[in-house]
Length: 284
Image (cartoon, rainbow, N blue to C red; front, side):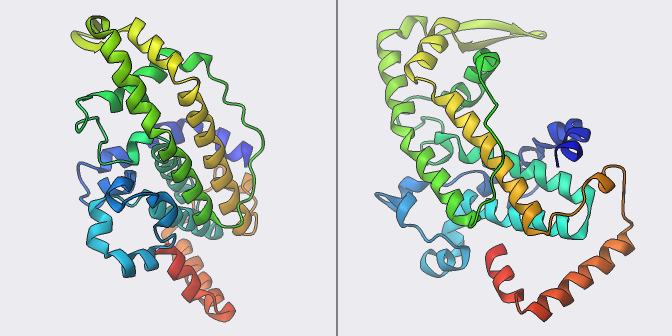
């Protein structure tokens, strides 16, 4: 797996922002990036149905989509990635791996778990980009991203919900610490920087540094957890697909006819193993 992904690192890097690009063209894309847990009441991260079909039955699809579906969508993309491994489709593997990394990253941002996603409800407009963009831009070089070997996950959907719960637990600190810091450093909160040909208003370096310090490593921890979870999901999809030989796929591109034939073979295999219903349930 390492050789395959390293060989295609440039593509994955470029494609990792495709989900954000699709938000402006695909109406169904936006809800895949977040979940407004506070809409569902206290301890929603622990009480909401773990599986999509149960959630639709209990809450209704329209309401789910309105308030975000990221934990269920990560599970769906995992199954799509597993399918790409089964089909030995390198283009699909890379595209879905990049997508999966994006959604996993979103699931590790505390402000992706609340309807107060940009501090608009607490007079903290701009905090979203501050936490997930400004701070990493300034302090990224100090982070340690060596997180150990990937691990196989026995139940992807349940593990994703654990991520959501841990991420949401950090939300109060994200908002409260910034609110208090703004009260004490108000006049030093912003300055102006030149980026390219534009001069833009940004959170000042001194303010950003202090906020980063008060968060006590939170941004780095969430980054590391995101890296680890992405690796776990890639590895799990590969293992669950029978560990296909990826070295042979590095420079290989199957034809559409060959992929269609493999999809038909997979369909027949599922019917023989009587797993079609369970796979459909998990994917939806």
